[in-house]
Image (spheres, rainbow, N blue to C red):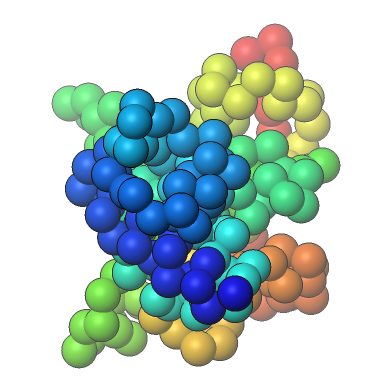
Length: 224
């Protein structure tokens, strides 16, 4: 039964990667779509991004290899999936935090920011395919993520506009890259590169890496 559920979910994800609707007369597929509250008209189902993320998590819970599931996810799905893992650990999350560029300042975007207590995790979510120059690409991505996180440490008042309830306090900021290419947690330029299937355990044990991770400090004063 578990393998049938996996196959049904993969088919749904495959056919809704580029569209938000899916026609199905398969009873198991219809049951799964109803479980995530997909709307339907006759045998045509409409599915949004959060429902796709719910389906991806359900497939993994039923034993589907995460690498297979990620193949049918979009960039935005992947960011949402990362945020959902942080949220499960009681992190308050914001996706796609942007700073517009000006004539004197370059633009910046951080895919996912998670805050819990005085810990802030700044994540670059990389839904990369297999590439020859993985090591050099990860090194460059790590360098850029360090720069973004350092800049974020001075702009927590802007984050507060998007993350309601951000507390007035000092924060410790950790830059992280999440991908599904690597097999184990690696460090590039002091930035952890975490495979998505190990993000859960990494978040649980993040302070074990504290002495190894490039760390930045910032303060948010709610009067800013």
